[in-house]
Length: 100
Image (cartoon, rainbow, N blue to C red):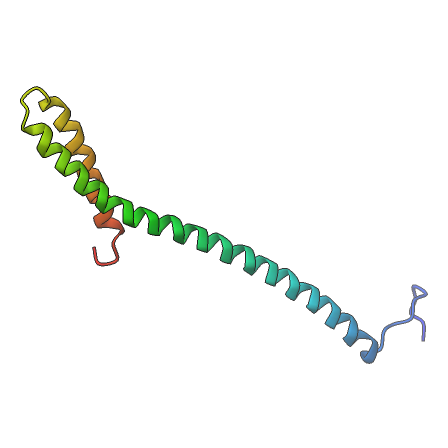
């Protein structure tokens, strides 16, 4: 049986394998996308964990430096900047913690 455009229509048995091939191609594309998303997620998780470790240490170090500089009268203006950075690091740590 030919259709009006001269091609023979596909029967149900012929149509199934074509769909299987197309579905397999789509699944391969989805696997590739999932792999890329997983890689990006793991990279961002590493960045987050590094920042989570660096922030409390920087907060403690900057606070200690501020106290040491405050003990000298000459470095009083520098203490303001160090304490501001220390406060910023402490706030970032507090906001990034899961319990904060």
